[in-house]
Amino acid sequence: MGRTNQSSVTEFVLLGLSDYPELEAIYFVLVLCMYLVILLGNGVIIIVSVCDTHLHTPMYFFLSNLSFLDICYTSSSIPLFLSSFLMSKKTISFSGCGVQMFLSFAMGATECVLLSMMAFDRYVAICNPLRYSIIMSKTSYVPMAAGSWIAGVVNSVLQTSLAMRLPFCGDNVINHFTCEILAVLKLACADISMNVISMVVANIIFLVVPVLFIFVSYVFILSTILRIPSAEGKLKAFSTCSAHLTVVIIFYGTILFMYAKPKAKDSSGADKVQVTDKIISLFYGVVTPMLNPLIYSLRNKDVKEAVKNVLCRKCSSEGM
Image 1 (cartoon, rainbow, N blue to C red):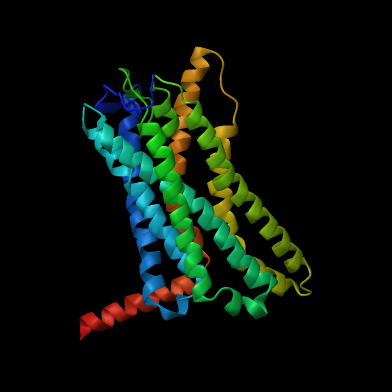
Image 2: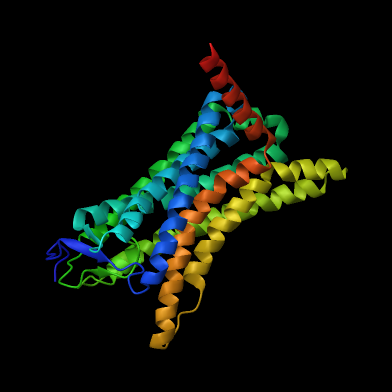
């Protein structure tokens, strides 16, 4: 069969937690609350990074990009996810599925590259502080962030176009909350070897390479910190990269747990694993973007001070 789109499917049914209606109300409230926290927390990070001149640095430029990315990533799926709980017919159009898949892929790949760029920023700041302003000048960090977005979008265009060109000849039930590509590929009635190969290559480029880059960066960072004579100096140096390291561990740890854990062989175990996979996917898609601004702000005096300054300026302008 040719690889042109001979699909007779015009929409997909998102199964989600339909088999567990008692969980839907609980997850609706939880996800709605977390989504509001994501919009608020990441929105605050973006606003203070733009409005406060003290935060016009490479680290906060990358952080504002990460916050904007998290808002885009969750907004591509969470509104549909929430609306599915309120409708008896949980469907998404064929084109809508493609758009959601594209946005999910683009944001995920971009975040992988962006986290590695942030690791390089921390490496330069700690291992080569005297040349930090030269190496991480605006002519360097802006193209680095732009390159992260371009790489993610290009990869997403490739993966999504390959997936949506496949013929879907009847079965249109996606056993997931969203149009997750692996769940969609299971419905194709054609050879998906090209899709698998392209995804393996993409995973190496956007997962393995950034992880290795981050690992090597932190090896140099830790070796530099250990050479600092005073305990106070070591603590201060480590505190500048602890937030980024925490975000990296949560982000990649969740991905590793999702795809590296063993699969159940019996049918009853497989059903339980599918529900677990969905919940882990929900954690990856909602909890991680919610934690990012909290991790970067709770122990960050610069962000706290910037928020206070922005609020004070707003109160002053309203009082005039």
